[in-house]
Length: 607
Ligand code: ASP
Figure (tube, rainbow, N blue to C red):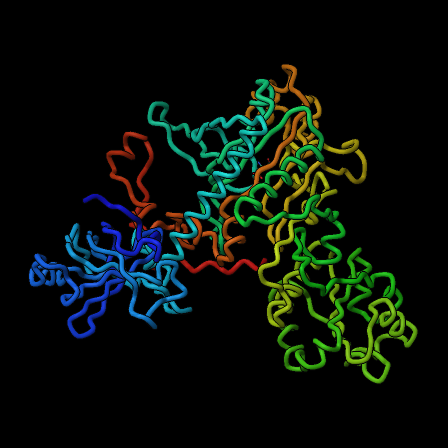
């Protein structure tokens, strides 16, 4: 008999049915000669039973028992049998197949498993082995219900996305993996060419330039579930290769791209959860996001907003603030209301937050408590009563509230304050679970200026359409991010389609004509053949799945990820290659084997 059902399928409606199941022995136990086995596959778990008393006439119970005796944990087996009710009181309401069991009448060991290096059954929190062990035996790790469900979810999500885009006239077009460097802000992985020794391809950091070329090629609406490669220092939750849903459209403005994405995300939501997602998504301007939440991808599901105090404290004879303000810095405060501050943030916690603030790059952290109608702390003596009153009013401080005040250069201070805000929210349990808040972060600058070198950097990438004259003091960029719960899902923008403007942006970024010609000559030339106005967006599929599934890491939604040190423990890559191969490529061999023990654990990313 061939497999009649999966291990997640049988219900009491199937009582009496003769079935054949194939799967893995997750768990077995013996109750006085009756053996119960949890038979698992990616669809679920069905209890199958060897019950000698209940066997129909003609079945050789002894032989059957012997066969079942060979079923070691995680062996692949086949059983034939009859669906029957479980003994009353032993049903398992948590398992969809939990009302029934299958009485085994025939059994076959399809392939025996060695003793698995870890338990694959339902894991209570904290019982999972070290992640590196899971990575080394990923094929076993993926058998776990949790992981199998993540892959099923991801596949459905991508399927809905493809369906939506196809229905809306998009073409799925593949772009090269071997190409030239793309400036997305990370290092390239490079691949040596054997045919042209000494030259290299770069793996794409994104298909950016190719998707723009497809617009020039009249393709109009393009998408791709694209693998991207970025050689970044190991940071928490980054992968050397990751998957983007990459989209480009011609003859559109920013709203068209956002409307299309909102349609896509809400269709996905309906498909995955059967619920309507409210659209349009709210917008927040980059500056507001930074100044209110200390992040360009703020988690706005909870408060703890910052209030600007720069003007309020401008005349305070407090040296630290004076120096910072003299250098053009900012001062801002956060009000922990009495119900939080009073009971949950005591003096020791304040010290802890001061230490944390220093760790995340703030010079220090000033605090004041509102007591007996006044602001109190060890530094109030440096402020006049009027300024203190003004701080109190501006911050809306009431009895028992605790104010944290930060000061320093605009960007770095808000960013660090954002880490502090998140830390406090986590500590105090202020972040709501299972609430999903999509929004657009927009009105971004075109460039960022390095405060030390004065050099211009692209805020997003150099193909973004500037919103005003490049010589203006402030140049806005037609770019935006799609954010969800404090995460950036992806960025989009309108692109430059005028070759002269593209060159002017490269100049502004410090590239001279010779560099532009060498690195982007083909791209600028392409724009001079009737390039249409166009724009697009790319969102990270791994990140989206991880957030929706409430997984801590994108590694938990990728079948075969690298570990936190960019190593694949499964196949041992990266690995040395034989000298003759290097010779063929004319690359000198580096001395020494990769010693995975020597590589330092990466620091956790703060946001
Ligand atoms: N290529 C960009 C990125 O990877 C996204 C885009 O502008 O479409 O961030």
